[in-house]
Image 1 (tube, rainbow, N blue to C red):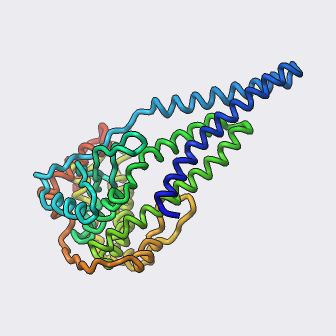
Image 2 (image 1 turned 60 degrees about the vertical axis):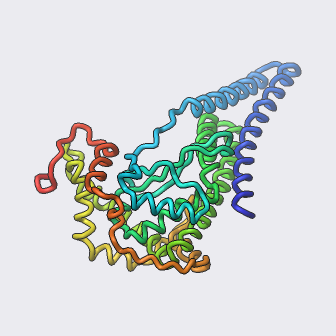
Image 3 (image 1 turned 120 degrees about the vertical axis):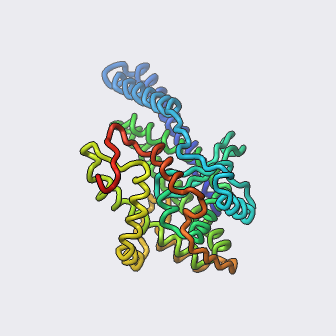
Amino acid sequence: MTTTLRAALSVLLLVGFYVLALGAVVGLGAATVWAFSEHAGAGAAKLGFVTVVVAVGLVVALVRVARAEKQGPGGVVLAEADAPELWATVRELAQAAHTRAPDEIRLVADVNAAVSEDTRLLGLVGGTRRLYLGVPLLQGLSAAQLRSVLAHELGHYSRSHTRLGPLAYRGREAIMATVGQLQGNVVGWLLKQYAKLYVLVSAAVSRRQELEADELSVRVAGRATAQAALREVPVIDAAWGFYTSQYVGLGWEHGLAPTPAGVFGGFDELLRGRAGDLAELRSDDAPSEQSAWDTHPSIARRVAAMDGMPDGGVATTDERPAAALVPGFATWSERVAVEEVAFGTRAQLPWDAL
């Protein structure tokens, strides 16, 4: 089954969830009317109570989701004039992917790269495209590896993966809110089983989309670079987790924090100072754990799948730090810390004082 058909099935299952929920309400309502007309009494009253509970729960869940505030895009916008080489790389890769380049690049504080698109009419009409790049990722990857990561993200655009993404996300929110409201009755149990089916299908679609996006990485960055980039991301993620818990976290609960410049500056120091430890992590096997509920294939699965993907014969050997593609990177990372880190009233100290 193609990814497009799987995505369509996911949407149909989302619609089916509410058809089932509405059918349950109508069925219970009809049964209640019949019960009161034939056997007015405690049994009919209980059935009527269940009908009201289910109907109210369904309405409350839908209202909660409809009123949920949409989060802003977040991050710090990096204009083309601020990072011309990075933007040129993104535009080149978008052309290779036969897709429209993002309208914005935003720097964020996560070990992550992602794309989004504001769409209308159930994804039929595209809108503003955004590419998110995590500062720790730029610190840990080489320029060649970043090229592979960028190609993967733009691959999501070229395959129209971002068109149904918002719908699927909101759909999951709505389904989980509905199931949460209807716990404790037979209808809630039935809808919970259906919700499991929806999430399983949705996760399978997402995993297939990740492999499709990997194909562009291999084609434009070369298989070896694409695989190396995949293996490097969990290493950077582990290093970032260690840094935030064992260094930043030391004073955090006591009202102390590094300065905005020190947040990412300290991580840069850790990457250099613990190069040996990171090399040991790289020598480990790629993470292979995966369940049917995961939205991404395991790193080991993706690396293995790349062995069978067409290699464009392009050897990308730019070993500069990926951060070199952003002039004045230290200033930009400081701005991200100011915008993204919740310092609160904590005293901000240089690392030596901290």
